[in-house]
Image 1 (cartoon, rainbow, N blue to C red):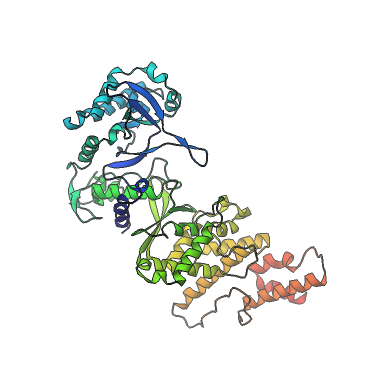
Image 2: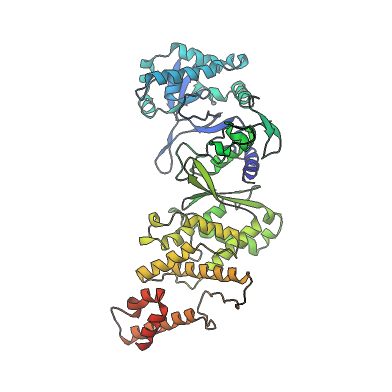
Length: 523
């Protein structure tokens, strides 16, 4: 289901009206190339061009190009086609391993020489081959960008002087790369994603951008132990979950696109990297992540506007039509050594998704002051129950569990950890602030709602209202009202009192209310 949805999203994004948002076709990938060797048709070096520019955060970001898909590298030597690191491309040692670098460069040259004759006759390929026949190290060292490229062992490629595209983007080279990517050396099987009989992808591309996972990427689909091998598929990893090469490329490309740094469809919820996408283009595709994401310093009201837009669409009946039936996908991923685990996944129609988000904020609704947010963000709710209100102290699994409960439905309880953390901070700091009170009310109401759908001889407990409920006869609720009333009497009777009954007894009242109630009654 998840891979099929990602495959469909990939097919949609391949035809995106915005060229900058289009995903590469099978056999190609989007890659940041910091340095480009511009050469003439005779192979003479014109310049080593630095493609990096400063972004809004004053950091250098390399230009992205659509290039032949890279080889999945481990500890061995494997070269990409016409683009790779400086050691592979130029054979210049940067780490004190000249023998390995020589082997790397030999593999890089072998990839070029292995191209079909039609590709090798191309002017761009001919220029690259001539470049290697006449280039000298002093000529490279004279380039202004050489020192930075050498220090970083940066990724680089080739371009003919005066062209816009790289040599590896020339049509004849792209065709050759696709032919290599679709050869028939793999076993045929029915793809579990598309249902077609096609060559199976044995090793799937890595997924990057999952917080806490390996920087080189991790996998969702992978097998590397005898326990996972069956039916004669020994040492044929991917054949245990047969996915065609085209489908494997599609879902990994789509997921890497959603997880990219500047993605508007990605948020970090605790240790769960969460992405959102729709089955077809929708204005809410990027708005829903703003509801749960951390508020932007430049635009702190972004999340509130997203909530208002969603609720106005519900109130106006906009989601009663075809747009409301658009299915949205919510996927939470967490690191697990060299693999990625699926923390949660939900597929809902937009009208149902909106209703569950609305219910979430109704559960949180409570009487508030003029400075308290009407729709508190998930980050603020989590920080409120963390020690010293610091993000570093938020329990790692809590955020993902809350989001999972939100999209699972109104009858699914919030995690017990949230209620325990909120009560614990109230007791430790003796301060029941707006966000903690909202969290406690939401957790209790969902538990009450959950108990009402299960058979029981007990009468249904009444849910807590956003304001004072005089009709609530629950002993705990009445004790809280009594405690607050006595404290108010004490404050007015003795203005400027340093310590009230709240300061003296609130912590104990949270754990042993019966004992404290007797003491308070005597006071």
